[in-house]
Image (cartoon, rainbow over all chains, first blue to last red; front, side):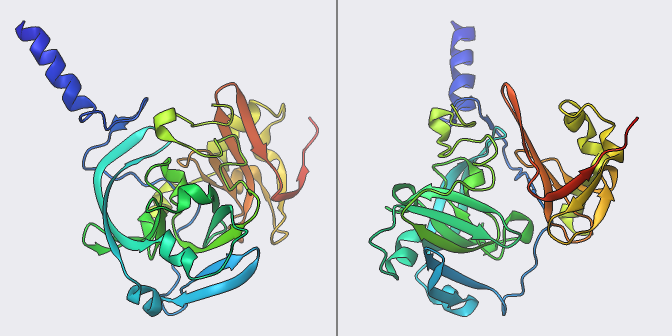
Amino acid sequence: MVISRGFLGRRRDGDRGGRLPPGQYDVGDRFPVLSAGPTPHTPLERWDFTVEIGRQPAARWSWDEFQALPHEEISVDIHCVTKWSKFDTRWSGVSLDALIEAVSAPMAAFVVGFSDGGYTTNLPLADATGGKAWIVDRYDGGPLDPEHGGPARLLVPHLYFWKSAKWVRGLRLLDHDEPGFWETLGYHNRGDPWLEQRYSGD
Amino acid sequence: MDHIAAHRLDGNAAAGRLEDVFAVEITSVRATCNGCGATAAVAELTVYADAPGTVIRCPSCEAVVMRLAQVPGSTWIDLRGARTLQIPLR
């Protein structure tokens, strides 16, 4: 009986009350850095954020203008396709709802986030809006470190973390889907960690 | 040192995965970057191996020359960034 209680106790602790998606492990206090290239260091005075309709710029914010947009405090669990998960990460940023509402794009059904260094990732509009995605510029009470995607990164915590593009500089609203950097190389087009959508065909 | 520099390897780090699919001594293959036109042996390219896949970049302009991803049952390779591959005959 004692053994059984201990076992159940560890199990409950191990998946943190059902917060760990299948195949993932809790990385604890660490925050791993995975890099597909060199870290861009865009000076804030040259940084801007653009919302494009098709390939045409439709709205643009300088760093100062972006700082003045209403920010939300976000506390979420994140899940990397390489199998680490991190609980209770704290961010501050602007919701994609607010950025997309700044332009009129009734045709938009898909969003591509694009970053310094050429990285892209794609989302259906339904995964990008409805309070599910943000452009975050603060982590854990401080400015977002460049190695974690600063000055600003996408945060789409309900999908695998490759969707949360580092060094993001804009959103492209499209009437069709354009798979991004990893989505064109064998990774899943949507990447829902709860459905374990790691690879194309999952 | 840039923290990311610790993640940057040379082309030898990708040789095993490339030789799984190319039956050549891959490190001596010379690749021409489609971005800047610089030519380098694969061993001299820059490799980021800790992303979900392996990203191989030009040492001159940092453009992506090749990308590889190992997924269950397949290896995916994107060579769009390599204008040419010059493969020495044995």
